[in-house]
Length: 201
Ligand code: GRF
Image (cartoon, rainbow, N blue to C red; front, side, top):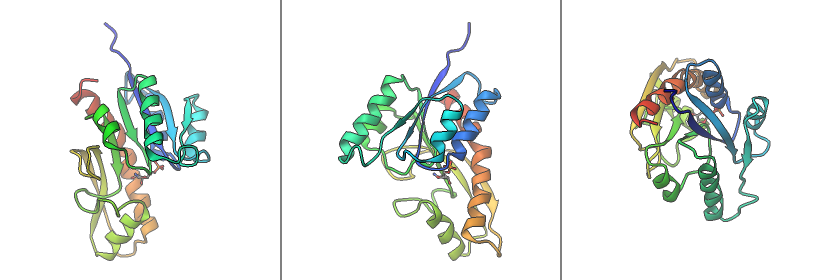
């Protein structure tokens, strides 16, 4: 019997390099039996939107501007996830925090990519470039990427995979970000395959 296709919704806000990695991994059969059924972007001009369109993936734009009340915004997201019969939600550089209602509806079926070795350098104030700046300031010799399940805390969900990169004495936050991003790209297809297996999607 043919295996059912896992329906993935990807939430983005920016460049979408991780989205691209997932698109390619599905197209190349590295993540088999899966389909990105939609990309939801918090930003209409994000490059991620163009990447999705280039692969004929439906895009839904849900911005703060259109939904000033966060509850309405999150209800709209939940509705779109459900309308598309989403099995798995991938937060790939999505800059908002999902409320309990969404997390409960997709328990163990939402994953996030974090650009550091959690539980270190996570939490409310630790996102984007700040993470890399802090790591360099603290004189760490190692950093890396973490892909984890999303629970009700910030960056506290169960870790799926992690990969380490060196922090070099000559590093700027920008250089470190690039090295970590490469690691994220390596890990994302592995994490998605693992979650599909673990959660029997
Ligand atoms: C990555 O650094 C990821 O760790 C963070 O947001 C960034 C997204 O990059 N959550 P991209 O949009 O996938 O290129």
